[in-house]
Image (tube, rainbow, N blue to C red):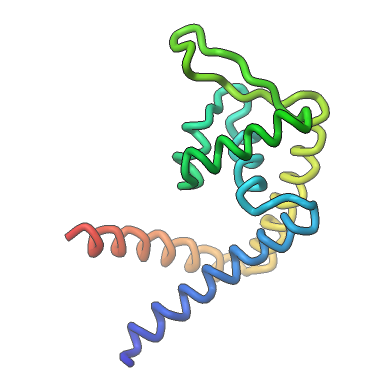
Amino acid sequence: MTKSETDANEYLRIYFKLNAQYEAYAKSLGVSYSTLSALRIIFEHDGNCTQRTICEYTFLPKQTVNAIVTGLLHHGAIRMVELDSDRRQKVIHFTDKGRAFAFEVIQTIKNAESKAMESLDENQSTAMLAAAKLYVERLRSYLLE
C-alpha cells in the first residue's frame, strides 16, 4: 500500500471517528444521529427550513427525513407552516418545547466543537482547515473527472 493510500485510509478512519462522536452524543439523548442532524439543520435555518433543506444538507433520503419530521411533530417539537408561494412546501418551525430542547442540544455541540478547536494552537487549526478544504476540493475534482 502506498503512503497516499495509507493516508487516505487514515483520513477516512478519522472521519468515521468524528461521526461516531456525534452518534454517541445523539444516543445519550435518546435520538438517532439522523434526528440530531435534522435538529441542527432546523436550528441553523430557523424559519426557513423545509424537508428539502434537511435532505440537501444531510444527504438523507426523503423518506428518512419525512419519518424524522413526523416523529418531531408527534412529540410536539415542531410545527409545519405552508409556504404562500408553494402550498406543497412547508416550513418547519420549532415549538417552544422543541426550541428549548434544540437550543440545549445544539449549544452543547457548538460548545464542544469550539473547545476542541480552541485546544489546537493557531497553526494547527489553520493547517487542519486549509488541508481539509484542499482535500475536499481535490477529491471532488478527481471523482468527477
